[in-house]
Amino acid sequence: MSVSARKSQRATSRGAARSKRSGFSPLAKVAIVVGVAVVALGAIFFAVTRGSSDAGKYPFQVGQPGVGQAAPAIKLPSTDGTTFDLAALKGQSVLLFFQEGVGCQPCWDQIKDIEAHRDQFTALGVDKIVSITTQTPDVLKQKVELEKLSTPVLSDPNLDVSRAYQANQYGMMGTSTDGHSFVLVGKDGIKWRADYGGAPKYTMQLPVQNLTADMKAGLKGATA
Image 1 (cartoon, helix red, strand yellow):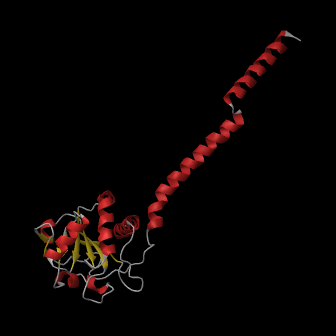
Image 2 (cartoon, helix red, strand yellow; image 1 turned 180 degrees about the vertical axis):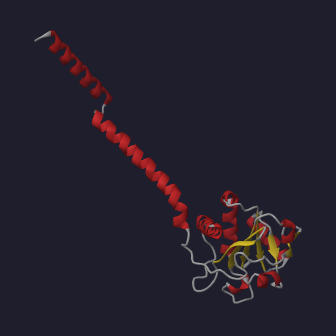
Image 3 (cartoon, helix red, strand yellow; image 1 turned 30 degrees about the horizontal axis):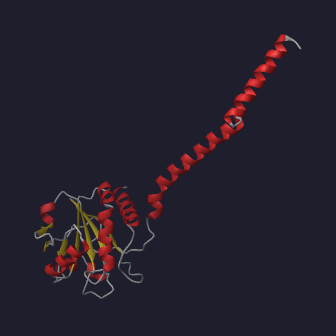
């Protein structure tokens, strides 16, 4: 065997030994790299499309006043011991959550879920969140303390604000209580609204990821 042939044979043997030690052939390594890239692209696609896929899963109506209209005044006693005045927050983005009250445990669970994912609302530009229902302040304060909530709950026993926003049109108990309505108020009026509590499904709680997806879709449509 010639010198050059022996050198070639030794080089081939060393390459085979290295491949054997590594456990993967060059072709297998290429396949692994391609596989990792596919997984990464799939993760990116899921992250991008998840928000849109979560929107619209819970049906809702849009009552009046709606998007683009002025937000009726709100001045109500709050469970934090103050009087909430919407006019004093002009320039801020305020999410109003109208709900049925003490007898609707899912409504309070909804507030807990919102508090646990407050960052998702902050990411959508929400500065403040308050809930509105029709029981008296003392009853609501007891419930808030029992549920260990930090969200202010406003007392509207005469339904003055509830009727102004027509939030009492979407409850299971007729028009004597509110349903499950969200109204986002900005500096130029109402930016987004969703009344989930209406017939026929009377949704009284929905996952925050669906709520924020609906809000995001609505805000995008309003500014497009």
